[in-house]
Structures are given as structure tokens and as C-alpha cells.
Image 1 (cartoon, rainbow, N blue to C red):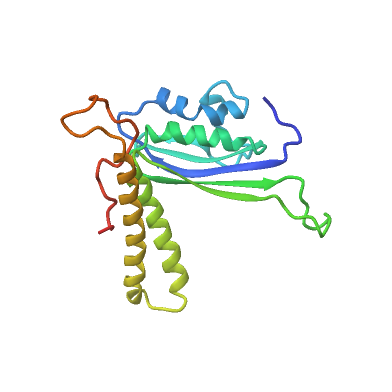
Image 2: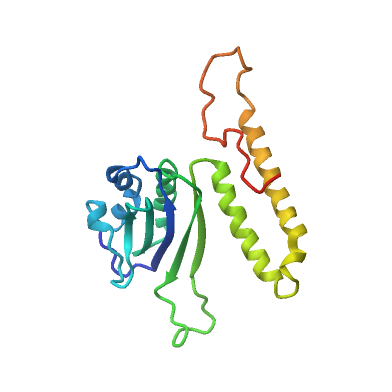
Length: 211
């Protein structure tokens, strides 16, 4: 459905490595919340961005990477489409990846608007991956990059090993807490109902760099 006078222009950006066995129909289904929101009938129909200079939604078959640089007109309800899309992409991802989403307020005019009025611009950073360990890994890497870039204004890179180690410890503790929480309620090994235990977890794999 077309959205005239939509309050936001929403830009979605990210590169997501996919498993080698993933095919186009699986990608189309995982991304249906996005292209359906844009009023398209298929991924091919909805892959183009609102801006011609943006590549839109593309699948690099050689590298097996889903590339998104795509803008759509919309409202706050687009956040639900993002949630559904992330759940679908999790099933296809080979590694963890970050997706940047920016909401631009189309009604706000900094030069001519009311000086007391504030823009409704918003920015989200979403993470997808095949399991919590992969998602935490990309979160950790981005945080380390941000912190190091900030602190290198005042310290040499070689001095920041302790800071990086503390960040690793925080993520290690979070990962252990997640695994422990998923273990609660499972039947003892060799007994109980024999159920699958439910839920996706890291399979005991700790993200690399976290000791």
C-alpha cells in the first residue's frame, strides 16, 4: 500500500552473510515484512529503494551476502516489520551482523519550522545472527571499535588492552547468564520428558575474544 504524507522516511542499511545453502525463495520469505510493507507483491518488485541512487535490497550470490541500502516511506508501525524481518533473517544468517535503521522526520524543517519544535528523527541498531553467541560477537566488536576510537583521542592504542579486556568480561558474563537462563527448566539428562528443550541458544559456544 502506498503511504502518502508518511511521517518518516526510513532507511535500512546492512550487509548480512548468509549460509551457502540459502536460496532466493528463502530470502524472499525472510524479507517479506519489508517488501510487503512497501506495498510490493514480491521481493523483486519491492527491492528498489525510494531513492534511485541507493542500491536497494540485493543478494550477492558470489559472496553470499544480503546487502541492504533501502529507503521506504512509513510510520512507527514499521518497527513491527523490522522485528519480523530479523526473526526470519536469523534463520538464514551464517554470521552475526548489524543492521542500521534511521527514521527521518519528513515534517520537520530545521530552517523554517517552529524553533521550539523538536525533530522526531530516530536511530536503531539491530542485530541478527544464527545464535546468541554470533549476535553478541558483532555487538562486542562494534562496541570495542567505538570505545577504542573515542579513547585513542587521549591514549595510545597499546594502552587500551585493559579496557578491551573489561568489555570482553562484560560480554562473557552476559553470555554465561544467558546460557544459564536457558538451562533452567530443562529436564535432567537421561530423564524427564525427553523433549527438545526449545529455544535457540549458543550451544555452549562462547563468542571469540571472550575468555
